Length: 332
Image (cartoon, rainbow, N blue to C red; front, side):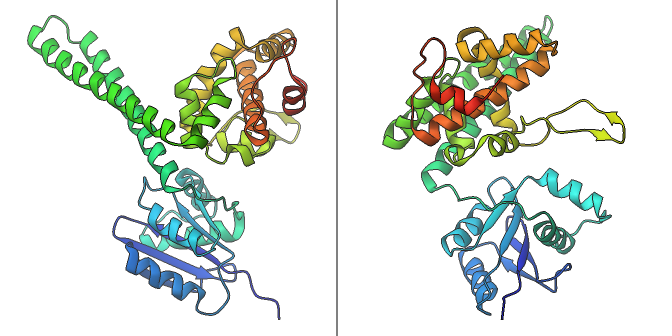
C-alpha cells in the first residue's frame, strides 16, 4: 500500500513549537512542544512513530529560533524547508486567513507545505551559521553607523549633542573593525572557505564584503542552476501580465542581503568586468532603462558566480570571456 504524503507546519517561537500535521488538504492533528532539545526529540519521535516519515516540514525563518529544530530534523533525515515569512503572510491572505494565533499560523504553514511544496534544502553546518551570524552583525553595525552619521549631520550647532554622537560613532567604528577581523579569522580558519573566497574574489567586481556575504547568506550557491539562483536571490524578472496587458517585469522576494551586495558588486562590474560591461552595453543599446540593465547584469553575474562555484573554476578571462562564462551566462 502506497504511503500517503504527510506534511507538517511548525510555528516557531522562542519557547514553543506549535505543530500542525496532516495527509490531506487540512491538518488533522495539532499539538505543542517545547523548543528545546527534549521537546524536539519527543516531537521527532511522534512525527515518525507511525513509520510514515513527513514528506516535508515547513517553518518560517524567525531570526534563529528555528535553527535547533530545523537542525535536529535535518539530522534525522526529515526534509525541512525554512521559508520567508512574507511568502507565508501573502499565502495566508490569498486563502482568506486573516486571523493570527500560534495554532492558526501552524495550520497556514501546513497548508503552505501541502499546496506550495517549497524545495527542502540542505541545512548549513555550525561553522556556516557562525559566519552567517558574524556577517549579519557586521551589517547591523554598518546600518547603525550610517544612522548615527546622519544624526550628526542633523544635529545643528549643539556641541554637546555632536560630542555625544561622535563618541558613539567612534565606538561603532571600533566595533566594525572588530567584526571585520572576526569574519576574516573565521574565513581563514576554514580551508574550504578560503578556497571559495579566492574563487569569488577572482571575479572583477567582487570584493571581500560581497564574497563573504555570499558565503554566509547563500551557502548552497554551488548547487544552484541559473533559474534557481535568480529566484533564490530575487533577481529573476517576474511577469505581470493580464489578458492583453503586458506589465513591466519586476524582481521581488529572495534574500535581500545578498541582493544588496550583488547590486553594489554589479555597479563595479559594469566598469571593471569585461563580460558584465559588454552585457550592460548591449542592454542599453537595445533601449533598456539603466536600472533594468543593471538588474539583468546582476542576474548574469550571479549565474556566472554559481557556475564557477559549481565547477570550482577561477575567473580566467581570455579576450574578455571564458568558455565557462559563455556557457553559464548565455546571450546578453
